[in-house]
Length: 137
Image 1 (cartoon, helix red, strand yellow):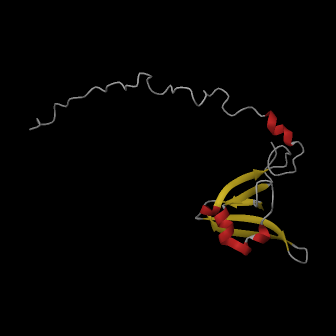
Image 2 (spheres, rainbow, N blue to C red):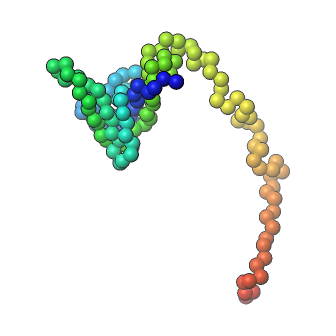
Image 3 (tube, rainbow, N blue to C red):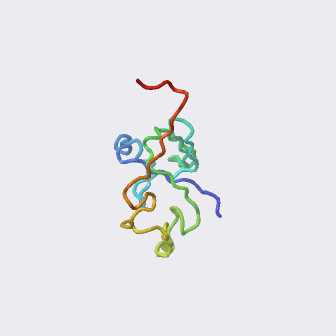
């Protein structure tokens, strides 16, 4: 399997609204909506830390760190160079139609449950009597 090339981070709509113009220079558009493309993600603290690669106006490469509350993050996806996975250019989107169902052996939603008896009555639990307690009264 290919090594990860980075991560795609999706933020909640409310987070994008709250961050406003400050986040817009770092956002990219894609089929999943606006997202952040970053090289590293650190989720160890109360703030999520993203490391992004950027360029200054004079063309120098710099590493940027964005930090914001983890509650703003909707989803983090690993981006790989494999064209059939991640956020690389999709060479064959039709490949997705050939994937097997996730739960092919699952019963239909209308099928009766197998977790409880079909009679509608739960079995009576035996009542344990304790001899170490004083009599009620």
